[in-house]
Image (cartoon, rainbow, N blue to C red):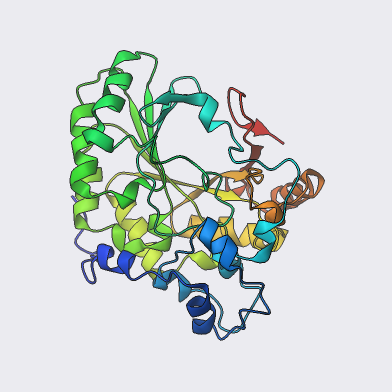
Length: 334
């Protein structure tokens, strides 16, 4: 049961807030009192990968600050259109690891389902910004093909719902999947990879937490926040509700130039997340996807920052610095 003391999130409905997201770069910069020309706003980049950001997330950006770390993550800019050697459409080898029907099998014992292509926010560094969602979506046709693949593979002990963002699906669609998954005896854990509790915390409503609480497996919710300023009281309340429903909360961040590439920023992220009940998990080196080269921090600097973080914080607040390399049996430590 969800303790009565925790706040509910019923109004406005998350679907309405989703629909009201900012989708125009000029509007976004106008809300922040910034000049589009001075920031290199790119219509071409927006056509290639549309801007989308919930207004609640915009409200956490600093008015008048062109270097705001939240703004930098979502604003389509000219730098995305410049060719960058070594950057590709499929930076992490999703295509080679595809088992079909939206399933990706990279690591022993785990199956990742690309549940949907929808996200509440389009992060400019997204490693799946070029992913063929129309061809690979596990929720298509009521999950049937993906569930058959899981049931047929006794080595799958953990199912990971990813995307896009799986929380963009309705509670009913999520429940349809897990109701069927209960019949698969070799599945022992469920993991959700999601940004919605951070960027659209209203999604964590009573229906969603009731679904989490009803599940028969341990549930890990792996969040994605890159900067301490992404947390506010609404996010804290959503995360409290998730924990009360029985979920374990972890955070994976991406090391991004101009966003969190300092020891101070990384320490603040770990401390702020832990204050909200979230343990740091991974600090990813940037996946080298086309359009994201301007975010890259070189490996020597990444190691230096990680060492500085480890020298400052308790060990449980220091995420593992890793890179995903296509074909590796797990994340590669740096």
